[in-house]
Length: 279
Ligand SMILES: Nc1ncnc2c1ncn2[C@@H]1O[C@H](COP(=O)(O)OP(=O)(O)OP(=O)(O)O)[C@@H](O)[C@H]1O
Image (cartoon, rainbow, N blue to C red; front, side):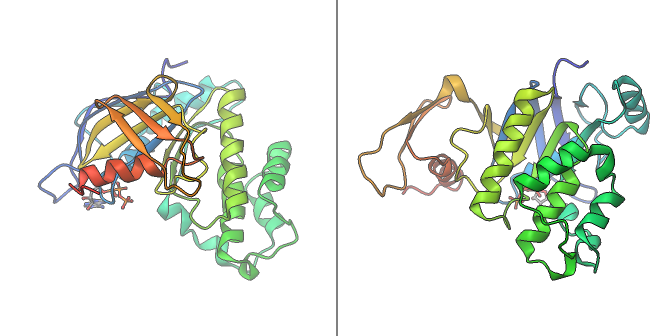
């Protein structure tokens, strides 16, 4: 089994037809049993990195290994399946924008039928747990659901088969706060109870204060900060009841955040810095 869930070295990626790279000399090592957050402005390069990790683009410049395998190589995936004890674990699952727009979720089809078509009976226990967590009624019909309800069914579909590495590209925007909080708890439990890791790019920081093990800050295609949660992040108690939260930096590698269950103050402080906004 690979030492790291994700092992990327000196990765530089330029989209075909573009002059400048979308990712510049990125090196990132994600251990097993961890949750990593990626923070950065629109266009910083978060989705590009997640897509490269999921094998959606070929990268010739740098090393990318997910579960010790080249995500772009079909041979790798074949070998991976042979390696897994029961063949029922995916190397990686990528849930991103394109995945959100899959057509099936708008069709006149029952939720039970939909979940059965992707192997619910094979992963019954996990499926039941996910339906319970995300409060899915198996009698719902997809075309009659709200956006958030559709997203909840879609998340059960995406998470039904266990994965070694989960690549989440902001797929929680439609969820209400309870569904999002339960989903984050589920992902935390997953990383604590079986060999897997989660890499999550998001612009929603509420409810995340106690969630990650590591936070990467990406700017203009480069990783410019890495915070190891246990050692580098300290929460202070804010005096103001309705404060937006305070952040104080100690150099570039340590930070203190006022005590709110949110990383919004940190994201806001980083992105203001990125854009040279003083206050
Ligand atoms: N298919 C593409 N072809 C060419 N350039 C692209 C393509 N996709 C993204 N880019 C460019 O790559 C850079 C990084 O984009 P990316 O989507 O990775 O940013 P992001 O951090 O995920 O942003 P957001 O928070 O808005 O989702 C941007 O400059 C973007 O314009």
